[in-house]
Length: 250
Figure: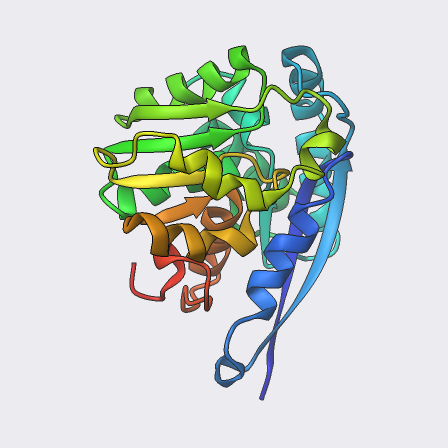
């Protein structure tokens, strides 16, 4: 017998990666789990990754949660890491709580995860107190990410920011360059490498290769979000070839 789960995706309007990488991971799970996933998106307007647009985008998130709950999704995932972090330290907890409340009010209770919260909790699960990260944002917003992590007790040892404000351009970045970028960063003193701190910047095909090269846990906003989706559905967190976070043991 196959169990079917509806996954609701709260997506920036210009995001084209979340709806490819997360389904790819969930659909790659072994057949013996007997699962099927369907994906349902609601979009929030955002084209350029700026503080102003991110604030306007986040204001639309509650409506998106309500719309998705009309479909009685089993879990909702808000996938714009910087959209959460730009609102201030710890905002992922507030966002997850208020979006969950929208589903309750609509008589369609469903757990809600955010990519920001997922990444913070992934570091805790992997005991990663010192990390190296790659981000596509402009320097000021990357500093926002660093400050957010540090407020959660995680020290950023080294980082690279790609200075790319156009969100569609972020989706076109070549993930094959990520390993070369990471080669130039300090990883020896890190507990983990965040290969992509943005669900729009592709990285899935490079996660396992980076983990093999650097010999430490490698994950991304997308792999962390996938872990949280599976965890909230009370399913095994095993996804082949997606790094040690998704080995089904972490």
